[in-house]
Image 1: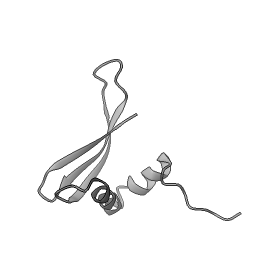
Image 2: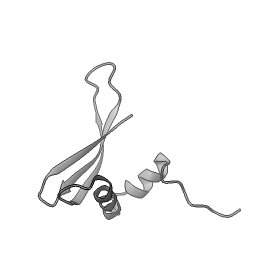
Image 3: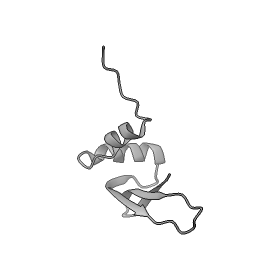
Image 4: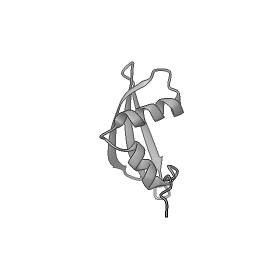
Length: 81
């Protein structure tokens, strides 16, 4: 049986491609292409910081990526699950 390509839309595959601290340039390139920020992202810090719910009906959240642009602006990406 031949090996096929893994689907990057699968959460596990996506996190292994773009969530590796060993190769942040892959995530930086993806974020710049996707978000098209006015000032290019030049660095990222990948964290697994859980964000507590404020209300019972809130969804669980995690701050996954903290990025810095070329003009030293900080961008936080929050994933809601």
